[in-house]
Each structure stands twice: as structure tokens, then as C-alpha cells.
Length: 433
Ligand SMILES: Cc1cc2nc3c(=O)[nH]c(=O)nc-3n(C[C@H](O)[C@H](O)[C@H](O)COP(=O)(O)OP(=O)(O)OC[C@H]3O[C@@H](n4cnc5c(N)ncnc54)[C@H](O)[C@@H]3O)c2cc1C
Image (tube, rainbow, N blue to C red; front, side, top):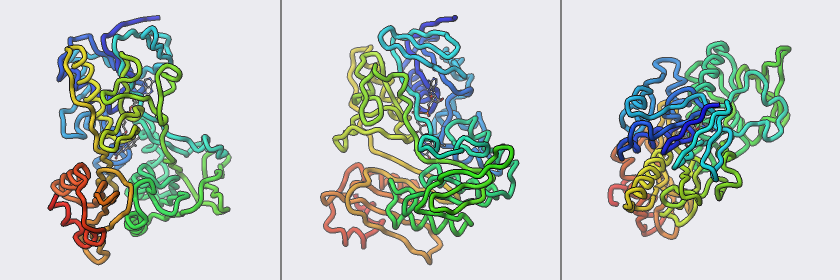
């Protein structure tokens, strides 16, 4: 079996890996020093596109159009870029063992790779309905979405089930985005989720009611307060209906499940310290091992602004954490110091012609503003207020300037006179900060 050695290895070839590679180049590396080992068959790309433009019925996004770093307005790193920079892109290759003590990675084909410094960037995988013991959850016609090959299978299904019924299980990011693109693809979509409203982890009932109303107006049916408990299958074992716990059944040619994600930390179990389900790192993304860094979805890092260790499964953090880790690796080599990571949470989503952004923390009391059912504009939002300070802001339909302003509010956490005053000021409050 083959073996090779690199100064730096990134395990995982997703968003963080791509941004880390660019930062290694910015910081200065020699040809042959860096390798990326990825289970996926393609160079790092902007994963959020998979549940949005990749599934559009027309003018769909396709590689190489959305390789990193276009998602943040940067240079697009096509596979040739890695070759030009002397970075080894080892694709379609799963690392099945990471031996931290001997600094050796072993792949499923039995090849081994030695590193001086390892950047772990394995991301997350989806939680499956079979994890909850739902019978038949691996049947034909049931889809999950994390990687491009899953998006490709879904596209095939959409094409072959034209005008059919799609059931979307889950009312979070993936559920909402997929319900929208499936509707755009002319499928008859029903969403089902157990909570009283969609995206309960972030949305207030007030915010959610807007989106639910909008989805209904687009023809999406919503079934709340129950879960998928089983499936009806045809003679070929293909799904025909979703059985719900409350006894109802929903006709289904396609089922898409988006019930959450789980960080892929198994390679490092028992070898690296963990916290809150992720690999524990410091403000430089260094683990408890001097030569191992962990970035993106798998890292539990000090969220300086809130004085807490947190894990974040969002693309903005995956990009920024990767950049921070590489800068820290190079600074350490050169005996320099860099500031600790000081991350302000930023989440966003786009579906239909809607687009929202959220900055900060969704804790404390909530204040809504701008909802006007009669108005043509869909601009509205909400503040989260804790200890008399605005700590989080949500805005649908904001302009680039307004979105910048809400980020500033969440970062500065201005004090307010009263909840009532903030409510009556509404969006105008952001321009005062
Ligand atoms: C469909 C979808 C839509 C999303 N939309 C949004 C959005 O709109 N906004 C937002 O903020 N976030 C969004 N996210 C989340 C965001 O994409 C992730 O937070 C981000 O990709 C995390 O980056 P990462 O590098 O940690 O992991 P990933 O990008 O998931 O990359 C991990 C990589 O590691 C590889 N890998 C894993 N294990 C191994 C192994 N053992 N050996 C080799 N390779 C391995 C995987 O194949 C993958 O290539 C979305 C996620 C998905 C799945």
C-alpha cells in the first residue's frame, strides 16, 4: 500500500478545507507541502448552493461555477488552482483511521499519509430517520442532502417524478429551502414537522407565521405537530406514502428528510478532547494536541462575545474558522501572535424570492417590527433583547447596507430605553447605532 508525507494535511474537502487552502497560499507555502484528503469526488465548493440554486428548474448552478471561495465574493478555486499552487487534492478518498500519536492517517484503500500538522475539517452528516427507529426509512425514494452526489440523485428523482407529490420531513433550514425549490420544480409539496412553527431554533412564532403564510400562498401544504412514523411502499420497495404518528398518511413520490445534522468526529474519538458534541479547540482552533486543529462544523470553540464554548454549523463560521486556524499555524511557526477568534454568529437563508439574515444571539425578550400584510414590500424583522441590550437582530428583505447595520447592532449590543420604544422605532433603530 502506498504512503506519503506532507507538512500539512487537511482531512475533509468541504467549505473549510477550501478556505484553509486559500489562506495557506496567502500565507505562503511551498509546492508539495499541503494535501487535502476528501471523501467527495470534487474540489471544495460552496455547500449552501446544494439546497438552493443547484436544484433550480432553470439556470441551475453547476460546478465549476460554485467552487469556493465565490460564496464570500472571493476567487473561484477550480481544481486547476490547486495543481498550480502545488496542493495535492486527494479526492474520492475516505480517511478511516486517524492515529494522532503517530501522526498517521489511513484511507479505506489502505494507503497511509503522515503529517506534521493536521487540520480536521470533516464537517457534519445528516441525522437519518432510521436513527429514530422509523421503519422503512432507507427505502427507495427517500432522500437526504449533504453532498453533491445526493443533490444529483435528488435531481434525477425530481425529473422522473414530474408533477408528483413530495413530502419534506423537517421544518428547519433544509426543509424550508427544499420545500421552496421542489415547488419551483412543480412538485406538490407537503412539509411535516413536530414543532408548533417552522425553524423554532431561531424563528419566533411571529417570524415563522410570515414564512408559513408565504409558503402556503405558494401552494406548499404544512402539517405541524406530528412526525413521520413509517412509509407505505410499492412492490419495488419505492415509497408511495408517508405514515404520520397521528394516523394520517401523505401521498409521496419523493420524500426529503432534513431533521438535523451530526458533526463527524468519530475519527478522533478518545484521542482529542471533546465538548458539546464537537472537538474542543481554543481561540486559534488548536485542539488539546499541539499539532491538530479542528475547524468548521466539528469545532467547539470559545465564542468570545458571549463567554461560552459553542459549536456552529453555518458556512460563515466554517470559512472564518479555517482562515483563523491557518493564520494561527503560520504565526506559531514564525513565533508571532495573532488575535483570538472573536466570532459574531451570522445565519442566513434564501428561498423563493425571500432572503433573511440574522446576527447575534437569539436569547431574551423579542420585539417584532415592520410586518405589514398589506404592503408590497416584505421587509420586516425582530430584535432580541437581554439585560436591556439588543443582542440579536433578524431582518427579511434587508438591503446590503441594512444587513451591515444589523451586524453592527448585534456586535455592539446597544442599550435601549424600553422594549416599547424599540418596538415603535422598528428598523429605524439600526441607523442610530
Ligand atoms: C444542503 C446544505 C445547505 C446549507 N445551507 C446553508 C446556508 O444557507 N447558510 C449557512 O450558513 N450554512 C448552510 N449550510 C451549512 C454549511 O454548508 C456548513 O456549515 C459548512 O459546509 C461546514 O463546513 P465544513 O468544512 O465544516 O464541512 P463540510 O463543508 O460539510 O465539509 C466536510 C468535508 O469532509 C469530508 N469528509 C468527512 N469525513 C471524511 C473522511 N473520513 N475522510 C475524508 N473526507 C471526509 C466530506 O465529504 C466533506 O467534503 C448548509 C449545509 C447543507 C448540507
